[in-house]
Amino acid sequence: MNQHLTHSELAGLIKTRAGITVAPEALQSPTATFEEFGVDSLGLLGIVGELENRYGRKIAAGAEMSKSPDEFLDAVNAAITAGA
Amino acid sequence: MTVTRPDRRAVVTGIGVVAPNGIGADDFWKATREGSSVLGPVTREGCAHLPLRIAGEVRGFDAEETIEGRYLVQTDRFTHYAMAAADLALADARFDADAAAPYGVGVVTAAGSGGGEFGQRELQQLWSQGPHFVGPYQSIAWFYAASTGQISIRGGFKGPCAVVASDEAGGLDALAHAVRTIRRGTDTVVVGAAEAPLAPYSMVCQLGYGELSLSEDPDRAYLPFSADACGFVPAEGGAMFVLEDETSARRRGARIRAELAGHAATFTGASRWAESRHGLARAIRGALEEARCAPDEIDVVFADALGVPEADRAEALAIADALGGHAARVPVTAPKAGTGRSYCGAPLLDTAAAVLAMEQGLVPPTPNVTDVQYGLDLVTGFARTAELRTALVLSRGLMGSNAALVLRRAES
Image (cartoon, rainbow over all chains, first blue to last red; front, side):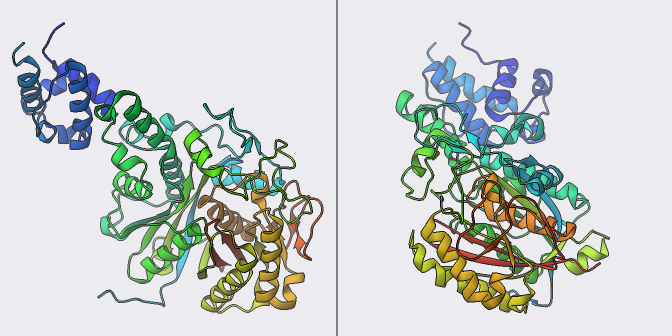
């Protein structure tokens, strides 16, 4: 199993957990922010919870406050790839 | 300190209904006018084994078609209904939310039980899989204030917002709170209530109510003011309204549907129905006084109509206490006998029906009821033509709240 969360998987999680449809390519834009897609910290918290359950690892507190998809993916991937 | 301006009159300019007998004010009114009953077996998943058999379900409501995904995932069915009803009310009022001053529009809802279905789903996750499987939206979706908050966020309404949790009669108290909000200077309030108590957890909670009808016959389960009254049938849905300061409404050329002229509320204790007589009579007198309305000016009464003999008798006596000799002559009706009681939503559906009845000059009938007790002129069978200038809406809650609302027809 690929222990690395991609933009595409994040787009899927945003759809299921926050109810918002975002194209994976839009998330890849270096200037993309969650605010422009309408994804708030509660939505990200739900995604964090699901990832923690999926990977059986704790993601450092604060990931849900990420402003951009890249910032969020960095925080998540640091946790799920640590010691892998 | 906020200055209250009692000269500001609050008028209804939009009606949005999500009811067991129709979605949208037009469909609701057609069904209400016909007096057909839509009570039927509870069909929701996980409810078949419960002794509560008959209810008023909202049918043909497609949440995904009506509400954006981002709001759907974080809200319970009761909020879906409230958001949809708010949309319908705003459209009916031809209210341009984008053109309105953001701080000029407030939101007030009433709630009786919050989001039981959503809460049950998350609590099942908690005990079956553990706390990490409870989603963050559990923190807001079940909450009584959820509908107010989501309507406010979704519409960009940043004016004064509130939720009234004062039992079933709180539906009328929410309207009164919206009137006060307008008198304090806000021009527009989106106000109402919708409930969704037909899910396993929510239904189990209701099984403790001695007033609940456990009848299995949809035509006999809810017969208020009749000798065969055997309790009330619960329902889901409700109504939202656009309420505006009359001057602002006229300025924007809005169609004025009715004025909320007077309201009062009292409390007489849970299930103490004999005592509700005095509490309800006092609420009626208070509402008449605020409306500067004489008892014989009331042209129609939309009754609480609990369908429990002791409570029905108390209501009839309360109407007689407050209206005197006029009580024997005024037409009384209870359309909810055909839809069930959607708790806080019930008096708001009655308020919608009252506004429409005044506009159409037609008192809708009380479905299913044929024999009428307690000396009331209860309208049964068919709608009755009448000149209706002033309507009285009554509501009581199982926990002891009583409220009365006086509505006046718009002057043409």
